[in-house]
Image 1 (cartoon, protein in one colour):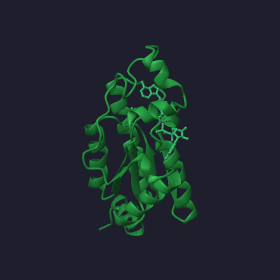
Image 2: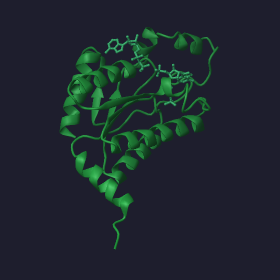
Image 3: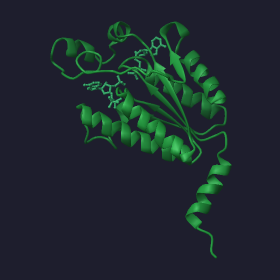
Length: 192
Ligand SMILES: Nc1ncnc2c1ncn2[C@@H]1O[C@H](COP(=O)(O)OS(=O)(=O)O)[C@@H](OP(=O)(O)O)[C@H]1O
Ligand SMILES: Nc1ncnc2c1ncn2[C@@H]1O[C@H](COP(=O)(O)OP(=O)(O)O)[C@@H](O)[C@H]1O
């Protein structure tokens, strides 16, 4: 009987990627530092010979997710799509580094479950920068606009953020700059 080629390819890939393909999922408020840490992590992984690819919510909203807004359903769909793309990248042997507010626990849990079902590691990292600090950074002036009522449904101001209850890693402001934080994630990735 001829082998099932589809099955064969995926089994070989799985064998080749042992200890390699994974997803690091950074969640947190706007301006918490997700993108900075993700960029640093991607840089470090690639420099260390480990293929990595960054999937940044803000960037993906210009292409793959350009049809989505910030209503709850749109955010859910945004997270679902990015979760699926991350799964594909991880299955191909890369470390997918996702940075997305991803405010809803159920949506993050679904992304985790999709990875688990495919036998892929999923490392959830909560960038736990308090709202007051994010607001004081406000690099794009969006918190100011939200407070002024010029922007509605802004996460942390008038839209919810559900913090993770059991993330693999929690990053807090006292833990250093984005390079130090990326180092902590690399360690967690090694343990996962
Ligand atoms: N209403 C509202 N709420 C939150 N964020 C908003 C909003 N409108 C625009 N932005 C900008 O969009 C970036 C977040 O996009 P995400 O795809 O990560 O959001 S989500 O996961 O779907 O909630 C986020 O970028 P980051 O600051 O990099 O997180 C914001 O700059
Ligand atoms: N660990 C950190 N300590 C202090 N400031 C930081 C840190 N990480 C990021 N920042 C600053 O906070 C702002 C928001 O960072 P960014 O990575 O764009 O956050 P996010 O992707 O969560 O919106 C930027 O001005 C950035 O320079």
